[in-house]
Length: 337
Image 1 (tube, rainbow, N blue to C red):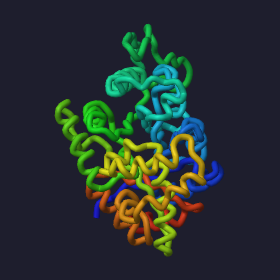
Image 2 (cartoon, rainbow, N blue to C red):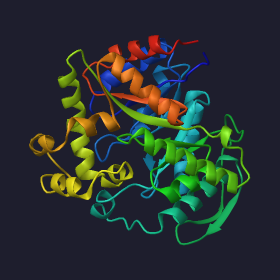
Image 3 (cartoon, rainbow, N blue to C red):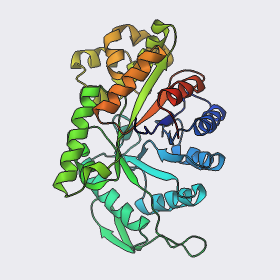
């Protein structure tokens, strides 16, 4: 049996002190990476990545994913360069083009996301390589800009860039341009197969070796001996995504009728009460289609489905107060080094 990389996903569901405890424990149990969410406007991933770098020694630490729209490419290059130094080269730069309605609500015009992503990634690579960059376009304006590192480690920054991609064209662009794709959660294995095929098409069109591209996937894990309790925990999160990030739900074939029904109850921002009001709209079948929910055995088997569909490293997000039992289950199901 070949070695299977494993990762854990951390976000604002858990306290910061709990995040640190889970990160340390995942590293102790042989997990390979920790991905930190940039959660809406609730928790910033950059601050957390610096802290995670300081309390771990081996695992890779990725941003899962950071929206680039509000950021200047040069200052962001300096940010990741600093994280790279702090972590001893363990950083993964995961970026995304953000989503509606949050972009318009904070005053950002999210136009031409494919072009903007292409330009941002291209220029960021040049800056990581310590090149002097002059670039003038609709989205980026730089005049002879570089990472002007004088002291310390002056080497080029070997920071892999991953794109959090959901739509067909963005997936193809990822295969063409990036070092990896962060595949979304709340999607079906069938969607993952299609997404991987699109990444492959983009890579082959650009003359790249598809097998060198990493394809981790965020996977919601709701595990409990009480199957109904596990499904309800996942259902609560799923309702939020149906109402707030419908582009992800559409990718797995969720009907517009259900999206409209949920959206009529909640939008962005929302409340826990509104989420609970909408939970009855979501059937068990949909919960199990797009999450790893149920008993420990059911969760492991579902994750295996995602791996078979083309995911290279499951990034598992535990919905329960203590993520350590989930870490234990998967460390035993997929033997560690």
